[in-house]
Image (tube, rainbow, N blue to C red; front, side, top):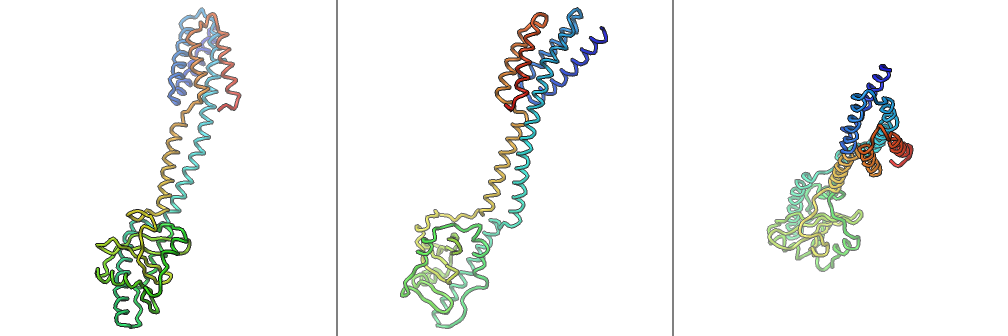
Length: 320
């Protein structure tokens, strides 16, 4: 009988140690209080050998072990959910790597804007000379259209097709033209007056149609360059309604930022989910602790059976 009592007490300590680990893992006050109450109950039987030690065994069998099984099930369910979130995080990371391998950075875009401004300015200056001297030279700088070809997909602002078509309309009597270029007469005079000093404002696109928008330095006047027709026209900036500054953030970079933000949210969810306990379980645990605190194990061990049955019912359902 002494050996049997010792075995029951040893097993009780093992079970209580497991409950302590669960209380630490979940960080839940009620589980911790149940753990402390279980220690008190264990000590009660250990210090009072005249008590029926089998009631301690029954307590653990009916209540503590069932509680441990329920907490293990919750932990396992949480781990499965976390694995799904971790998979999503990894997929997002892989996608970001793929996008970064093809992205044109905003820094490169900014640098190449300056190069393109120089090309357009040089081309306009040469076009002015060609038109003034009535010669047939080619006015454009080398690879002048590569800028839009390279950056339009990521950086240019989308506008309705009809808006872009309206922007590139002109009257034949209002332009100078030769075999290589078309430029509005008043625009030619304006850029020449300001020594061909210009700045890049933004790019526009509508489907496959693209155009570049420039601002004449020290003025509030804008003009467009339409590469498909080598066309230069004044532009009423209010028609494109893009505000005072162009958008220079690559759409791909913006998407990467969205993915990074999403992963931050998923990681936060993982941290919360790791030790999450369903509300209905929390409510039951609080009720269990209250009952455990109130009962006398010498008189009402059946009350433990009632609470244990509630735990078992929850353990065998798909509530979690």
